[in-house]
Amino acid sequence: MSRIDDISNVLRGQLKQAKLAKDIKVDCTCGKSISINAMFRCHHCGIYFCRTCGGEHFKEDQTGLVGSLIVNN
Image (cartoon, rainbow, N blue to C red; front, side, top):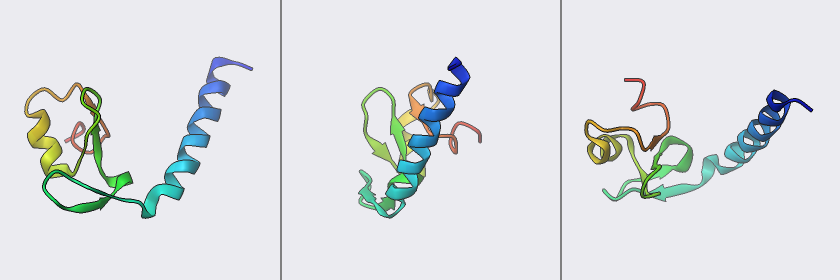
């Protein structure tokens, strides 16, 4: 199997798991309870944040952000 096939298989499995997690809610540090699929996780500290708190947590340095909404804005 090629490296691309390996990566595709891992991604396929992760997306399948993410679909199952869509109903799982996580509390942000601000108190909002949000679907884990809509939250951002800090690569450095591991904490999940809503969009607003994620932007505040990362300020100008967004290198630790896992999630695309804040990074692509």
